[in-house]
Image 1 (cartoon, rainbow over the protein chains, first blue to last red):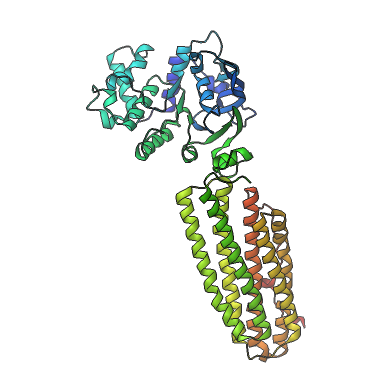
Image 2: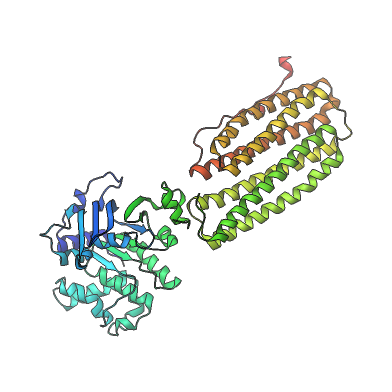
Length: 284
Length: 238
């Protein structure tokens, strides 16, 4: 069903050339060994307005990290720094350092398209292409040249749909439009599309906020399965969702990273008063 | 501390504390009266204590129901989560304290026509006063979220244990002096044991208060002074 660790490692080598990158990752001040994504003193400005202030965080591989905080706290802004989505916003300026497996992703020589293949993204509203289910998933592997022939492409599409927990529901209608699916299925299609290019990191920006509880539970179950092979970062407004799906939690407030730690600890005994006030629903 | 945005949530948490204070007050009263009944051979007071236990049990169920509802409806987190879980633990200790007071009152009924051995009762009296003060202090510590006071209650339980040891020895000696004392002394011994157990439940509550405030358990080993389970006064030593 799921890709084994070796398959993923193989994919990483083949598609992104990060051979041995994990072995190079070092323990760090954040207390996480083998941090996949490391940010140091990240500042983001939209024109004059500073959206992120000196954010430093370590995000482990093969685990789910939740970013929580009130609207406008900078959590989505930070998420978008990790695949350089902020580059597309006019007037946005990013300073500081973000590395994936030790590699500076703001290095001018870095190919941003390649980066976005390594760092997939799932959005709040499911946004399948107005194409067939098959084409939605095949699109990425095709433009990145991941398949030599039709059989290989079929294989990638089927295994991605399988990993996204969608194959059973769509296998007889692969050539129907992606937009004909239900909201929850569309979101899993978007996850399959992200997985199809063998990313290492998957960013999810409130992936369940437009879904009903059952579709949400399916996505959460999927996230739990995917974390065996991917570094997952999820932005969510649901405290319960963060508590359910993540192993690490980071709390943002007014552009600052206030507190980060093990999810169990953050939700039972947060160290910072502002974290406590936020997660317990007190005036902030 | 800041108030919740949702006012009814804030009110529910406050109500929880009020009910615990009420339950604690009843448990205090039961303990004090149970000992008075034992000391003064007052069957009417003893009956009142036995009767008041129902109110304690009723409050326990009310509080437990409220906590379950709050978990279902509010999904409390962080200090709120510790608050409701702490409440759940405290009410079960208070309920046990109520039961132990009730049991002491029953023993007061059983010995209401027995003689009044004054020297024996003074040891028991100071033990029960001590237990009562500890219970008051721990309830104050809970109401004020005062972990220092809770910690001192937790440490001082050792003194109740020491008093219990000496009451235990006195009672044994009294029984050996005259076998006709055995009936009375056995009831007094159980009464003393009940008070000693109340001290233990009081330290449990102290631990909960510490957990509420700091989010972690007390890690020290509590000094324990009850040696009666290995005490034997044998003929050989005389």
